[in-house]
Length: 390
Image (cartoon, rainbow, N blue to C red; front, side, top):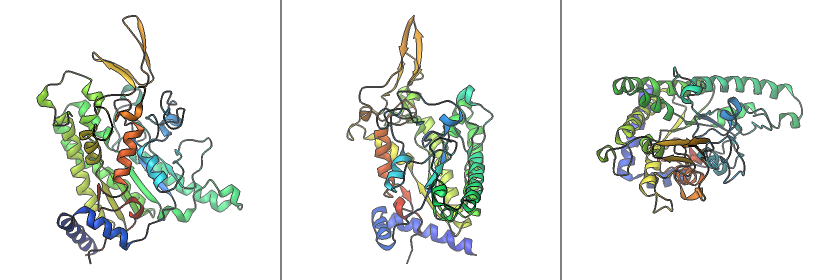
């Protein structure tokens, strides 16, 4: 009966969004509720939010990554900061330490379990073959559960504040914000297999796997979830440089329609599953964030927002169907080519053809943290609340 009431509330709230508009509901929520004051953030994902886990697990990211903000490679697939970094800044936290990084690490304000190449559903592929990480979402959740148990044990064993300073407080886990930014590599795996029927059949299971991760965290006390859908994969410049493309294959923004259709289907099923999660987890606040819409808006208005053409790539060599990825060298017709960075990464949406630049990450982050692309339309600082319908 309780689940049925929650489901009805969700449906009615969605209706109110259509009638009243997102902005008016967001302002009302912000006025009625205080900020959540999250004590920590825990993130699960792939390279879009990997702050160094992949570098710790496999091999360090080399130059020119990190050049814009950090001045050196720091394990991010970007010239600088990622969306998760801007979210951390907005919440007034230090940048999240990767769970797998053992050097100079503090977990007082959370941890990042994201690893580049990760998928929601385990894939029968490998990092060496096609860049797929073995740290799928189920492994990331296992790592979190182990992390929580071990840090809580050690926190209670040590007696001095100095020894506890880099450990999360056990009571903070239930009050923390839990973020998910994962799914793009599941779609990429489906595209590689070139079997539309198999992909369509797999989507419900993929989103169920993400739902199980949320349910597991909820069972361990987590209550606030901020879930990103996946971006328009057909707009990634690397796809547009791979082969000859017919005009009818492109949409109005110059993106591959067939690939974006995969993202759209995944996102539609994910949103439906999030609505069900709200009914299944009555004490949880679950926010669905439309990253696809935010990124597509940026891509469609690139020049108006101060960027070059959205298909341009800052770092890498992609000409005449020759692909030399960012930071790599390759001999072509007897000449060694170094795929270095462009002069001004802030003018590019794409850093390396797959990942967004710091400037683009900043644009997207600051268009989602205020709730403009969220359901319900809550600022991230208020994501622990569930809007009242009264």
